[in-house]
Image (cartoon, rainbow, N blue to C red; front, side, top):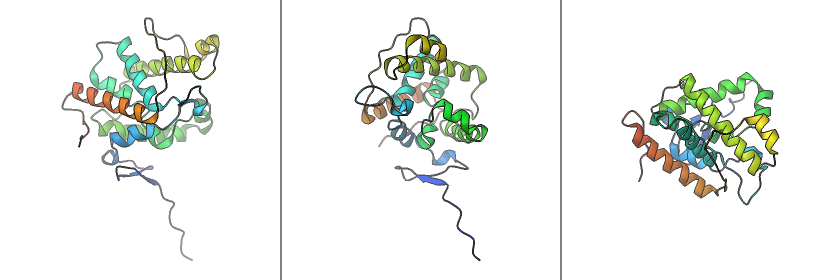
Length: 207
């Protein structure tokens, strides 16, 4: 009796790349695919106010901005890491934290493997230094505070309890962008940061 073929474990991207989800290769990762995907992935499972959902692409741009506000002298490589902190979600989507916790460590290992491939593709170390990860996580939570109170219906005290206080001196009024605007903003920041990071970081090819 013949065996059934193994289930497909790769995804075809609009760039034409085929990304193996179980063993992702940095060579199959393109920033245009990431930006396109993240601009169409909604934060908070889309449970937000406004004509457009808050996309992961726009969220990522804000997180990078907060990192730079908190640590103005930070190396451009780590600002790029902040921009890419949710890049794996162009493949796996933006799972809310309670669902990630329910899935457990297997999901985390899968996400970490893809994130490492993305880092390598763009000239970053596979594993970001711990102090940088802590900084990015704090900026991520600060952005979540603004999103929660302005878009997702959370009361201020509840948001403070869940996400903590935003950094002193940083203020944000969120206007969610449509997919095209979020994608363009993400790619613009990527181009600026890769140029600032220098020759060790792979930049995209612009036709």
